[in-house]
Length: 135
Image (tube, rainbow, N blue to C red):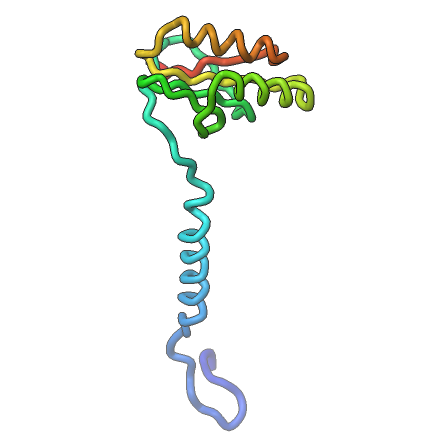
């Protein structure tokens, strides 16, 4: 008969032990809680300009952000133009196909964005993209 064990025992298994399953789930939860702060990058709120035509770009090792208050960030860290130039120059020597991604708030002057494009092109970076929000 199904559900009976062989031998001298006449007991049937009436429930499933879920304690090992709960232990595994708790360990996985703890791993996610510990690793999430390392995965999540702090970001700065940038109000991007909107455009109807735009293409998706792949993430880059050279990401420049300009906030509305004028702060410039290189890969998420505060930087001045000279640091951006040195980093872009070193990166373009090791990765000739690197693409600079420039993210600028809509209130940043056009001249500042052009200056950043000029800095990365002078450092040897041949491709760049400007981040937008699609309409």
